[in-house]
Length: 346
Image 1 (cartoon, one colour):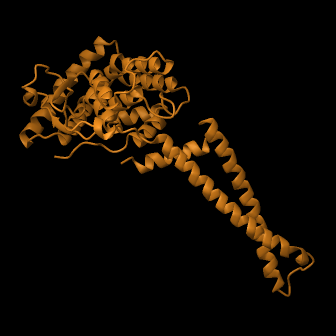
Image 2 (tube, rainbow, N blue to C red):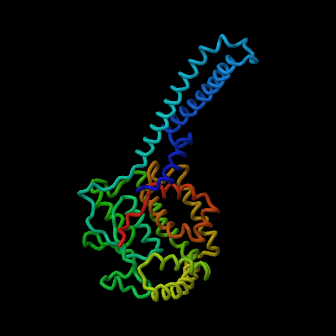
Image 3 (tube, helix red, strand yellow):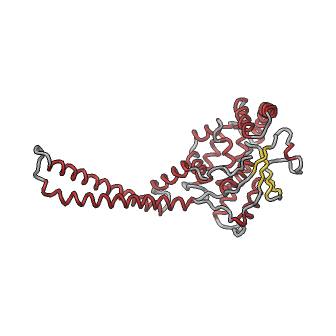
């Protein structure tokens, strides 16, 4: 189920923003016109009210009373008509926006019967896959992998996450998983296209994997307190025993703190937060005023950016990012259209 608050907020912004699209622009102008007309009708109704009041008052001025009967009837009639028109217009506008934002779930015959994701809760690549599954309403089970022992994927030759099993088939590497699963659920869509939209989408999906994800770890594990905050989030959402939670939280936080320092040096990051803010603004600039990179609906690049940012959004680093950049509005729209998780609770 889609997040109602996020969707409603997005619809209202679209309705009231004359630059959103030509259709919405025209609808907004019509909406403004109806509002102005209703204000005029309201003023006439006030005039009629005072007219009727004055008829029954011995102290009221009566020089204009003979003219008010026709205005009273017209004001009430036109006022009701205006209210009905406003209601119909608003309802139609919201309905069209809901249709515009409607998801495209797979047809029943193409929906996988069993999907299992082996993951780390805070892994950006795992969350990229989850954003795709959630957007396309594909139910999935989650197996939380212990980042120290990795016992849950002992059976696999591939020792990284995410690993996605789809009806017994093992898929690895987040981008490859999304491409192959996308071909399964929408087999009629062309896998490769030379259109400008597809080229742009591919470019920014590559940017997510080659740049954006690399600025996240230095921010998530920037210092000991933020590293512990992150692993507290990880262990709270994973299937760990009490002993495992303590071990993973503290040992993992220490290990990732030092790993993040190596990553910072490897990718020539001098200021973690500045790098994160710059990446966020780079994405906003790429939108170029559009609701999503895909236009009226998110494309795979939108889902990739949203997915990798989702695990940090409500950590200290994510809160700082939203506070100091312009990415917050786009992120809220994405929360609305992606909706609730399709994860199957154990």
